[in-house]
Image 1: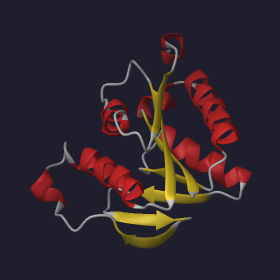
Image 2 (image 1 turned 90 degrees about the horizontal axis):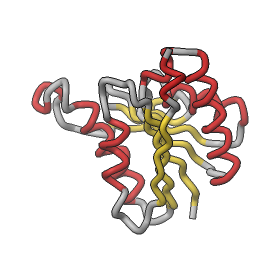
Image 3 (image 1 turned 45 degrees about the horizontal axis):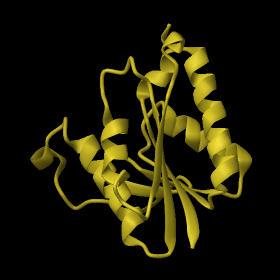
Image 4 (image 1 turned 90 degrees about the vertical axis):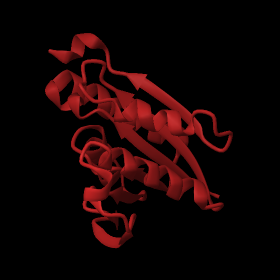
Length: 156
């Protein structure tokens, strides 16, 4: 089985240096504990981008990115479409959540993967895609799911 760290999180961690550094440290710890061979994320600014940079720096971790353009990338090269559905049919507010549905579904559909979902949530964030995604796997015995909250004092 291939261990996969699925990352989801708030874009709001980019608001301050303290929040960015906290996120970076938490991702390093998650990689140290899980020892994943692959990292899966949604390609968003914030937690996703920080996790991708950490995995790239450390090396030896395949990076899979489910971008909002409908493509899945493997180490920056286009690999495959993650959806055949039209963005307009789903709607702009639902599209990122649909991407997260597909990202998690991809990991769960592959019996060769052992997924761990890690969310980093900024409580001052106006969107809550991280918590939505964590709820997708919270009751699934195949996935260890945990969410860390960035301390509120890091918001400003």
